[in-house]
Image (cartoon, rainbow, N blue to C red; front, side, top):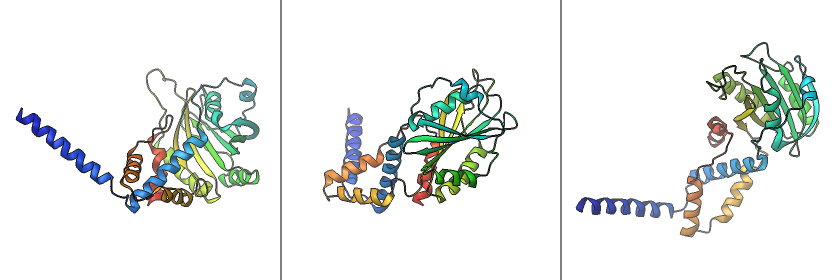
Length: 253
C-alpha cells in the first residue's frame, strides 16, 4: 500500500511540475519551432494529396517517350501523385517525371526513361525546367521517379536511397532559388511516398505566420498551455517519409 501511495505521489508531482512548466510563456526558440510546424501543416493542408489509385490512361502511357518530352496536361494537384504512380506502375526501367504546378493544377509535365532499373536522370537540364516552370507562372515543381520491383510480394522498395536524398537537396536549392516549391516523390507498384519537401520562403512566409502567432499570445497561462500543447502535438501526414521534415531543421538553423 505504501508503495502505491508513493507511486501516486511521484506521478502527481511530475504532472504538477509539467503543468506549471507549460503554463509559462514559450521561449523564442519554441516560438520559432511552432511557427515552422504551422507552416508545415498549412502546406500539407494546401496540397492534400489523395492516396486513392487513379485509373490508367493508356493513350497517355503510350505517348511517354523514353528520350523525354513535355506534355500539356490538366490534373488537380490533389490527384497528381496518384496519376503519376499509376502510369509508372510495372515499368521495368526507372522513369523520372517533373510536374509543374500552377494554381493547384498540374499544367505540364516532363518525363523520360533511365538506362535500366536502378538509375534515372532527366535528359534536359534542371535550369531549363526551372525556366520553363517560371515562364508559365508555376509555383511548384514535383519530381517523381519509380523503383521497379519484380519481388514486390516479398520486399518493398518504397524508400529513398542515399543518392535520392542527395539529389533531392541539390534540386531543392535550384528550384527554391527561383521561388519554386519542390516536392520529391517515390513510386512503387502504384503507391507513392513523399520523401522531400522544400518550400520557397515566399510560400506561407514565416514572418506572416510568426506575426499571427504573436497576436495569439495574451500572456495568460491558458494561452501558454494551449501553445505548448500545439508544439508537442505530432504532425502525422500519411504518405510522407520522415526525411520530408528535413527542411524544417535547415530553416530553423
